[in-house]
Length: 324
Image 1 (tube, rainbow, N blue to C red):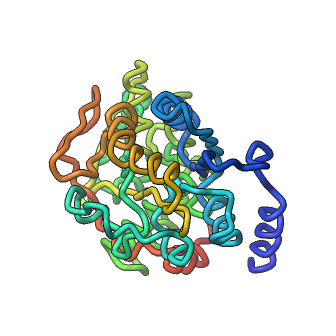
Image 2 (cartoon, rainbow, N blue to C red):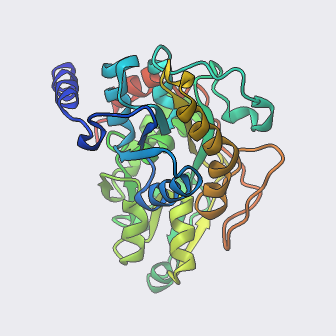
């Protein structure tokens, strides 16, 4: 594992945004782990707001973004990190600028980074999504709790992302570790594996399997399930007693870059305007105390799971024990 990480970091060092060469004083570089459609929206809005700046937004998966920033440090071409998963933030404390001068009272308490290195940007929640047509065809009831997913009648009908390759998969694992204790949670997933159609490599896999009729039940992303419901798919969203697991994402500035006016302008506009617009259009789950966003068919008053101790070290430790 350590050898792989060393190789990965070496490769990342060799990668660069060719469009960033000869970076000018009015150039702002954003590393983003958000989905392509969200990145396109954000970049379009930024260029509309700041025609005087050369704004470059490059996508990379959150793990790659974190690894690259860790290696590059304050010398990184990156000015702003967008959609950074909180699980990596503690490893990047010395890379990100202090944001204590921003108003943290606006945000839900469970969305705050205690070190104030990132500002809340997105809550990505999970649900149990079911294809109601398949359940009816097979004469099966909707599951009422996690224990129901172990029933033999659901054999081969359950899809879940692999926690080792998917943040969505990991948040389900972490939520049950927190709710039940580590031993019981891992024993549960050992049993659940008997009913799993396949562990998908990405968080979008279960909903895709539901839409394609390959699975009847998916441990899924709420936002993706809602999107497919609004597209006409026969899906239904369920929540169990333990609540909706979720991942938190934030925005930060590389240390020293906050002193550049163009970077500060862009960052402030992201925080004050575009994060809220992104929530209204794509990810309406609650991050602000006094602002609620609505989307057709998106569940309201969601009870969230306990996701405490969501650190990179804890994630690495738990994933070492994952064998499926």
